[in-house]
Every structure is written in structure tokens, then in C-alpha cells.
Image (cartoon, rainbow, N blue to C red; front, side, top):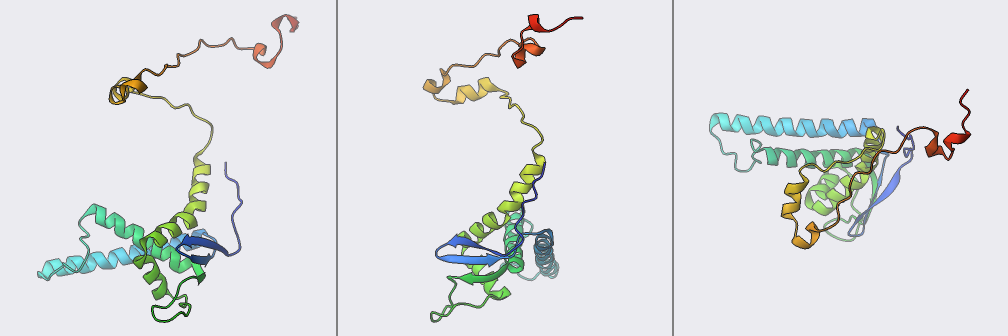
Length: 192
């Protein structure tokens, strides 16, 4: 089930450190634009890395795109930057490096904010895409499910002794089906 209660007007996010950003709602076009930005940046970086490796030039100033962890980190960074570029329309608490003037909202300044302050970038990504994550979670919830603990003995061996002795809930025998669960007595049900 999906509840369509999505923001349609720009709103403010408080990112910490006295920084607030006004953003467009996180819509599919904004998300896809951010993903396109991420893919373009990763493709350009990969092409430059391969080109330099082929001719024997130094790649020390480039991230090691052959390392999966580094590629994943770069993808996260570029996606956050792409989202910020597409979403941020105003901000408060972002000053120029010289003086006390507010910095203009430009793609270069947004990149500077997102790459220079990891806590701001993380807060922005979590808050801005949080709505989308909740929507995705709502899509996946169809009915409550019972959780099963498999391998409970192996897990119990790893726990401290005082925790191992907690009572274990035994499975209750199945209750009879029929009208008895609804408050009716079987003797009051006509049997024609």
C-alpha cells in the first residue's frame, strides 16, 4: 500500500552547524537527474583512469576506481552532490570564505559544501531522501510477518551466561477455529 502524501512546495531542511537549505520536493525527475550526474562523473573518472593506465601515466592524483569500496563511496558522493545541485534553491548559514556575506547558491558552491563538510552532506542525503525511503518501505509492506530465529543455539552460545538463562517462549497449541474466537458460543449457533 502506498500513501500519496508527498510535498509539492519547496521546504527547509536544517542540516546542523547552523546551516539550513531550501529544497525542491524530492521527485522522480530530480532523483533521475542526480543519478545521471553520478553516472556521468563516474564514467568520466573511469575513462580518465583507464586512459592514464594505458599510456603508463601516473594515476596517483585520481581515486582508485578499481577498488569496489572506493567506487561505492564515489557513487554515494556524486549522488549526494547531484541531488543537492538539483534540489537546493536557497540556503542560510553558508558564508563566503572571506567576509560575512552569504554565499550565492551555485553548482560550484553546492559542490564545495557537499565535498568539504561530510556531516552536512550526510545530513542532507538522509533528510532529503528520507521521504523516498519511507515511500519505498511502504511499498514493500504488504502484511505483518512473523520473524523466525534460526540457529538460536549458535547465537545463544555467543551471549553472556546471564542472558542465556532468559525464559524461552514455547509455542502454544493451535486454538480451535470457528466462531469461538469472535465471542460466540458454539451452543448458540443454529445447526439446521
